[in-house]
Image (cartoon, rainbow over all chains, first blue to last red; front, side, top):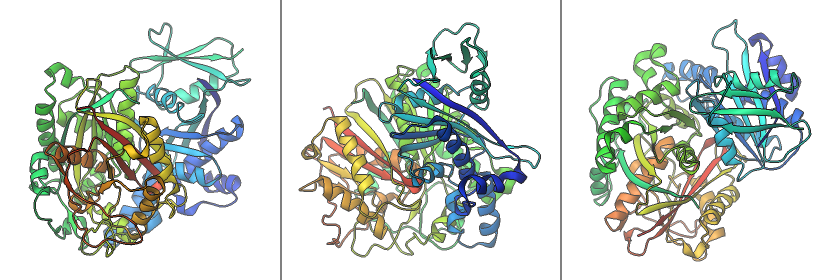
Length: 217
Length: 362
């Protein structure tokens, strides 16, 4: 399995709307903030990776669609009235897969997970299994800022079966030596920071096992 | 083809606090769901008949009850049970706690999943997954991966959806609810009735009567709130499930429909079924009896269907009485003799479609 275009997107809350408008021409108001944050990062990764073919989208989050959930609970339920339809839909963190498909990406399946911090190897494991049915799997970690000062995060990489120039080979390591501990939140940023900085392999471990990332060629 | 089997199932639902009560109830006369003001408004709602009380304590009590039943049926050694990985699928997790406790009561979906795993008495790795109404099968998909990759021999899969005002308010806002009753596949169907359930499935590498022949996933991006009217994505996913199981369409004995009584969604699924099958095999919907239990519906309906088949019955589709010519077929219950291969459909908001192929290995 090969990894392409690891990228860690950080967006200050005040800049969020401008970033969405800049990338997608207008704010995707009905999508909700979490889905838009997913789309921004996923699209940036796809832009950098190129290629085509059936695509799985698999991402994890700790807080999920915080903004939409707050809006739906605050604006509708306190009044005892039906929720605004698209505010309610935006509370579902899984929405981004369909929105990506509507932007002409051939998405064949999508899922949003929540994991223990050290369980990040579940993501490449599951992606590897999905690669039996699709050629590429976008893997991400997306987190809305819970407080005004912190940045929104949308970290993504593309995993695929086909080797390409510049791709990183990813292999599961059962007995890792010299592996650095990583978390669900930081493994993609660490791969992104390592990518291109050295020829030495990067070995990251989580619960149970580890993954070795090696520059191809 | 997978090497995974259904070792045991358990369920708490509107039909009863345990699976046996539910199967018994399902064999009787259809019930009309009460209007439940706990969930807001006056919409009918299929509630689990468990004493009211603090949301979180009630959730844990339901989980402990289902766990006890599943543990008895699974007959695993205590150490095996305790080490089980637990995959939890839901579209709402613990948002219902907000109804009583406000913002302070909200917790991340992973924390609620840990709470459920603890109530089940398991301490293996926990994963939470949300793909709206297919969440329970997304959890099953992760479990199948763990078994296929040799990471686990048994995995606990939970589908959970418990009463909350947000979901009812959301579906009401989308104008998808019936004011009276769910009538899957019926000419007079006018919307969904929501319900709550906790379905538990213990998936195992050890052979058992029902083998999971394959589980296929698809994406229907026509709209984020409903399927493509022509059923194209559903048909493609069902076809993939059959291909994964190495079945021809003629091999399918029974289709468990997604159908919940939505006028257009039922029609879209019927279009997919008619595209693949001629003649259409027997079919059943369980949402007239359980309600649409959203992220719980995969494990919940799987548990109920397999328990009914074990008693030799294909359940009747509650709420169905008048065939709809536009669908082109009608569900039918009755004797389950000869039902060996079941295709099991789910679909949800956000374009998620899943189809499970189940085979009775005898």
